Length: 67
Image 1 (cartoon, rainbow, N blue to C red):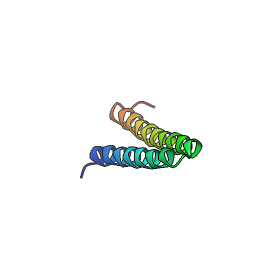
Image 2 (image 1 turned 90 degrees about the vertical axis):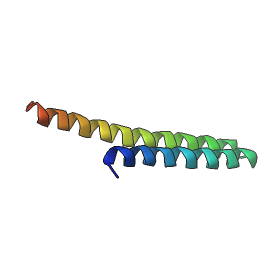
Image 3 (image 1 turned 45 degrees about the vertical axis):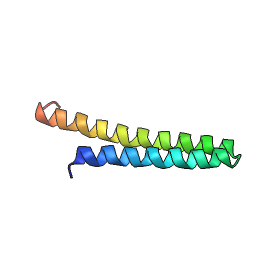
């Protein structure tokens, strides 16, 4: 499996897990914790995206030999 597909599946799994957990917590009346789960998932996905963008910029720099 390629790296791009791995990242997409990783983000999808985090999103699906957060949605299910958030839904279960909201149904049980724990809205505050559900919100924290959603925000935590968003931060986790943002970290993955920022890391991959950083790798992309490093590869672009290497391809064009930019110092």
